[in-house]
Image 1 (tube, protein in one colour):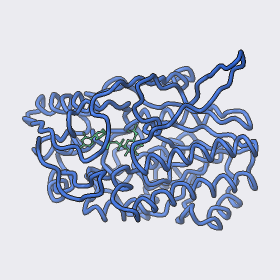
Image 2 (cartoon, rainbow, N blue to C red):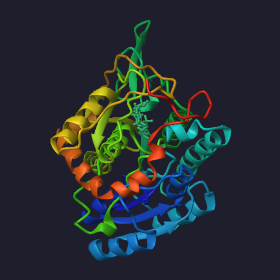
Image 3 (tube, protein in one colour):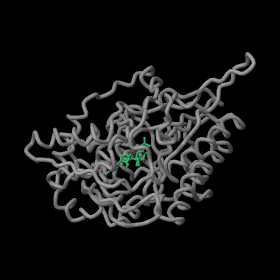
Image 4 (spheres, protein in one colour):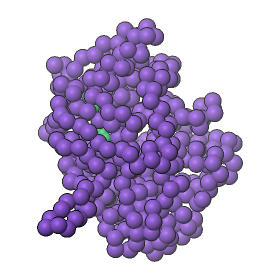
Length: 393
Ligand code: USQ
C-alpha cells in the first residue's frame, strides 16, 4: 500500500514507519523537524540520543531498502501538502504530524495559537487534498483520549445513542478536554467528521491514551534507528518522565493527589493498533473512532510501579507528590470502552513491568544526558498562566 505518514521524526512515528516499511509498504514520510526545536525551546533534549535526519534516513535505507521517500516540509503549507499528495497519491494517510503537548499549549497565547494553527490547519489541508486528489484514501488520524476529558459517566468509542419520541439518533459523545492542545484535537475531530459526511471521505480517528516505552521490535540493535524519549514537562509523558527521574535518582513527581486516571499503552502496542487500523479501512464516507489504550492506571499506581521495578534493580526510588500545575480532577471516575481494536485482533502486551525494566535499562546509560537537563523534570507551566516551579506537597 502507498502510505503517507506525517511527523516521521517523532517518538511514535519513526518506529511506526520502520514497521510499515518492513511489511513491504511504500512510504512518503513528511516532517518539518519542529519537535526537535520545541524540545530545545523547553531547554531539554531526548534522553535517548538520536541522529540527525540525514543519518536516520541512511540507517533506514540500510535496513529497509528504498521503501521511504522523505519530504521535508510543513503540512500547514497547502502547496507543499498538495504537491506531496499529487506526486505520491497515497492510499492511506497516517496523520501524526501535530504538536502533542498540553503544557506547551498552556504557556501563553502564542503557544496556544501555534498549537491550534499547526494542528487544525494541517488536518484541514490534508482533508482538502484528499477531496481533490485521492478521495478514496483512508485517513488514520491521531486524536487523544483527552478529548473526552474525565466525565462521571462511561466513555463510549466516540458515539452514543439518544432516543426521543421513539426515534433514535447516534451522536458524537460530548468532549470536555483539559487543555488548548486537547481542544485542538477536538476541533480536528469535528472537521474530519464533517469532511466524511459532506465529501464522502473515510477516516479512523484514534483516541489514544498515554504512550510509554523505549523499545519496539524495529530498532534491530542499530542505535541510528532508535527513537527519541522526551522527559521535559511539556513533551515527556508522566510515565516516561517517572522512568527518567528514577534513572537519575530524583524523586518521582505525581501532581496533587495523584489519583488522576488515564489509559496507557506501550509504544509497541500503539504501532500494532495503528497497523490494524490501516489494514482494516472503513467504508467510503465512514468516520469511525477507536479508543486506543491498554490499561487504566492512576498516576500514583504508575509511580508505584516505576518504584517497584526501580527498587528491584537497586535504584531506591522515592516518590514526592508536588503541587499540581494543571487544573484537572485529581480523583475521579474513569471508565472507557475500548473494544474495536480488540475485535480487529489487537493483542495487548499486558506487561507494564517488563516495559519499565527495558526503559530503565535503556535510560541508565544516559543518566548524564538526563541529569544535564534535570531542571526540566520539575514542572513550572501552570494552567493559570503563571510560570514558577511547583513546590513539594
Ligand atoms: N502528571 C503527573 N506528573 C508528571 C506529569 C504528569 O502527575 O510529572 C499527570 C498530569 O497531571 C495528568 C497525567 O499525569 O493528570 C497525564 O499527563 P501526561 O503529561 O502524561 O499526559 P497528557 O498531558 O494527558 O498528554 C499525553 C501526550 C498527549 C496525548 C495524551 C493522551 O503528551 O499527546 O494526547 O497523553 S491522554 O492523556 O489520554 O489525553
